Amino acid sequence: MRLTGKMSNCSIPADKTSVVVAISYSVVMLVGLPLNGLSLWILLKRHGLKSSNTVFMANLALSDFLLTLPLPLRIYYHSTAMWPFGDVVCTTSRMLLRVNTYTSAVFITFIGVDRLLAVEFPLRSRMLRTSRSSGIACAVTWVLFIVLNIPQAIAGNKDMIDCSEKARLEWWGVAASLTIFALLMVNVVSTAMVMRTLHRLKTESIRRNKGRVMLIFGVNLFMFAAFFVPFGMLLFLRSLCVIQYNPVLRMGTVCFVSFNICFDPLVYYFSLDDFRKKKAQHTLDT
Image (cartoon, rainbow, N blue to C red; front, side, top):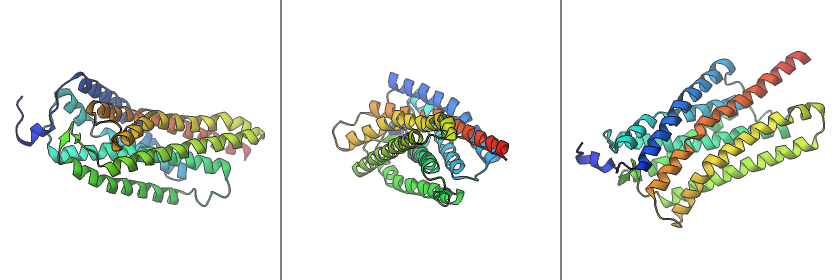
């Protein structure tokens, strides 16, 4: 098929990398869309937004769910090497992928910090760990990353490759990568502090719940380190011109980070399982 006009700006050679990316996005969509849609429904209908933890998990599920929406267009694009949907749709799909990638990283960190406060400061943190304060934090996160991504989206309209900006704004790449590394440190410190506290406390209830609490933090830290750190490292090195722009490497890294939405439901499962067990224990005690 011969492309003309603006459509030709979005065409790329159909190579093996594009096929692998199309297959990978297909897996992410087939797994992530129903899992996160179901998780969001369960969080809203069965648990409600009555605690800080469920508010953060609901926003994480929403972020992951929104990230899957542009994937059918990306799959078509990488499968056919054509983008017949126009610049507006291309920009919108990039925004959805970019914004929800970063918000997912923030919400995962919020969940870890919320659990840290519950373990370290169970009484003093009650005033802070409310559904209202958590909702405000999530709303600020959404607005902040949408606004910050607008300049990058506008810059991407000037010259596109792979339906993505050819050159990333240097200040944005540095800021985004430093944000990811800062969030990583928060997750590492949170996990270390909880491990120290659980090791120090010797009560029967702490020993009984130690494995379950550490599992929640372990899942959070593993997913962050495995999926977001390579993406942040690429942004940092590219922004400092340590490595040259490589569309194949960038395409593969962006595709890989999207796999985190297939594993985020583990956070909901273990956290809600912990919630159910605490509720059952409270019922027995009363």
